[in-house]
Image (tube, rainbow, N blue to C red; front, side, top):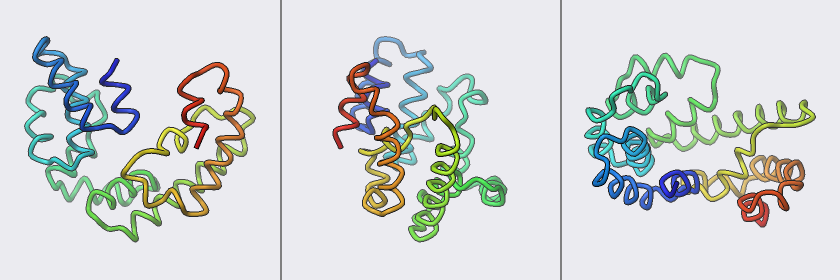
Length: 174
């Protein structure tokens, strides 16, 4: 549980610590290996992330294709994903490659798409922006108007969660 909590609160160093501790007890635990890989990737610790791959036994089902392609500099796969109409993928690629202007543009497009879709639904099923309010990779975007617009929308939409979910209370304070 601590692995998941720290990972989803963007505490990736703590995630690494908990995964490593867990793997001492259960060295074959695929969930610990997966989140150790994910945390190393998000910490931009390329060699450590790549060293995890041999431990992942069912890698095809984990949805790590993009991360692995970025770590291995698979230009064909990256070009294919950049040719898609998915600004979230574009953001991940450009952010990883250090292309700030392109990453910002892709993230703004993804935000606008999300807000348009969420506004059309009577009950949205995601609180992505609230969940990522403390994500250090997104700190550069959190002050811009388009990010604040979607935060305001989610806070209004999810305000009813405060009494039911303690985590929502923490998120909605901001």
